[in-house]
Image (tube, rainbow over all chains, first blue to last red; front, side, top):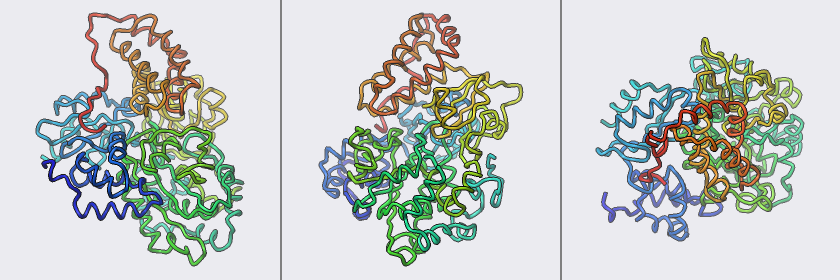
Length: 161
Length: 439
């Protein structure tokens, strides 16, 4: 999508107004509003900061400052699917380093990069809170457990192919 | 015992986990059929708020988020006459190795809603918030559904069950920041700012919390205990152990959430999680997440409770028990732990922002064949200077790993350094940080 189309859709505006009404102070709605915009575009284009700021009665700088702090608020375009591969201790003990090497070789990317075909953005994640399923990863909102190289191939090959 | 996904129906050997594998338990009708919301009905009709506080206080319940602070005492800090006060549930479960709150939220989300209603009634709270970890996508759906159904049945909203008590409950999404689990950073985040911790004093949440109003922050598991305590009484609760959730992961055969009496030994917890892999021996473990000081073989019979672990210079933390057997490379584990804190440092204070990075740089050069004999003294020095100097507990979470590593596994560090060879190219980092997507 081109920058000039990055205005807030009427449905997003309505949703952000509804989110704002949940809180005693409008600024609390900022992260949920950013995530709502992200649901629209896959990321939060900076062109939308003004619109969000206006809806919540904030300065644009505040929107930018908060957006740039949180890992899961994407301030640059991402692939059609975001992979979060856990490599923290419990997953490391279950062989996550080998899985990490495999994913990086397969996709030809390092952490926080997007594949050339735009299918995947890959993030080496911190603990995903699913250590009983180690090694694990999220693809979009879906969690995959007890990963092996073969399982990773199968999951990635059938995702958005 | 560890819950296996195949188990169907209530598990009478457990309390907190009793219904997590019951099919349809996320639906309010199933929840009610299994005894759910009985405590809300009784408390709102037969008990005054002070009696609810007294029941929880009498149970000696301690917070399950990490600090282990007595819940009843925390509740009593709140000025009862304050016109506006808030309850904030810390569901930002992110301490490495911890997955018990996720297990409760995915398996029995109504139990948390019931605990929130009871707690809000006890404290005179009109607005409650759940700060839910962004990555817990399934929990968002399930908890959202439980809350919608509670509104439909008149258990949330105006004049609950025809009483004068009203409560609104909002789920607030986190967006990928471990630091938001620290209670004052959580409040900053909930107010729509960067998740950076606040100075205590003056910002003790009980006095100046959310929107500067008196605020109680409780963990998911803590609030899930409340309905059980009100249904069965403090004495019964104590007789059950009291029940404690341990997230057991790493080198055990059946990793999972183990419900066991508080103070169960480490050896027993390993057994309950299926034991070590065949032919392997116990080497070390994190008893309370990666912020706790690792234990070693001589500690295998320690009672896993706040007092015994504190005596060993470690802590109960969030009950995240990460088991490591004799195949484990401790230098690699400790480097990964340090890297986690570097990644998650909010950057507010120097000892944490710079200290975590410095420690990681030293550990990675050791790991990649560029270690220097002086590095172990340097690590000791860094560890000392990150202790008691950081703004919040995040930076302070690196020294326990370093200190235990250098005390118990110094030979592993030395072996790496002895193999050092400057001719080997030094990789950038294990985990390169290229800011393309994300922040």
